[in-house]
Length: 418
Ligand code: SF4
Image (cartoon, rainbow, N blue to C red):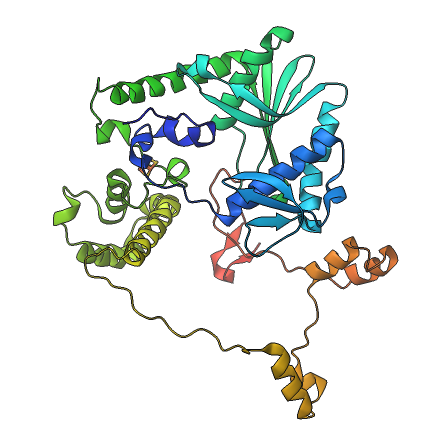
């Protein structure tokens, strides 16, 4: 195995499942539009903070993404991957910038700061780039912008803790810091989460991370053998973005055991029969068992999606997958080969406007965009706003730890609240 990379952004995975470093080795990095969009938003945020400008100053500018790095470009082009700074991106990024500026007021702000935590985990060249570090009188703050919509909590967040350790290594001598504040900003879902970790807590965490690193290094150096049972540890958090999901034996076994109960060998068990029986037995399960099954659904869904993607990719690559092949799918929706020509022809037939065009009232969300762009004035917006209604959310299953209070359900009145 080549030398393992202890990346902070994947720390939640390799600390919980050390074997993931081995399993993911040699699997390609698939960049996604979402990841590139996040890179663009980070770039915009850092440009604003470093140049002391606001996000709207860059409206309609084009950010090009090349090999995961962002830079400005003159104009958008269909041949390049990139993002135009629109009002929506500017607004979300500005929320983050405002929060950073308010915290940094009177303190020292470092943007896109490289932090090296090698000494804490016992591995050379272990570093990352923190979006913003603020050196206050009594604490160091580590701020992380996350542009995705999946909620991430700062509590126990391994990536931020490694950044916190790196920040302590670099700036710890400049003050008597007793704690590090780790903050995650998710402006797109209005979520800010923070953890205040004492220096001792961070050192304790470093000790655990170091043990994992030692375990991996021993395999790297051929001093110990890769043992699936000890090294692979499936779980929702660590498996979510793991590239080995579709082929990981531990995850497959965990999923199948949850669904169909214990079995010895996946290759000898009749999956179709097992799954059919498992589905039929669901309604009669005890509530306690149902609760456990329900908690496993995200992991099962992640696994089934990964298997589906892997099979599709392999067939597209011309590989054989037992029992499956690629066929021509259903034809797509009809569209005009030349919309302008179609418009002219239909016009020549003297069709009425309402017959020719699908006119639809804009949604409240789009009306709000017009308000933000200044097309709808503040007084006009008050009138529009009064016309917007929003139905109550439907009862939704949530974990016990959810902050919302549980609904009181009266079964006799068929789910009405009492
Ligand atoms: S899929 Fe899950 S259990 Fe398997 S290597 Fe990845 S993180 Fe570990």
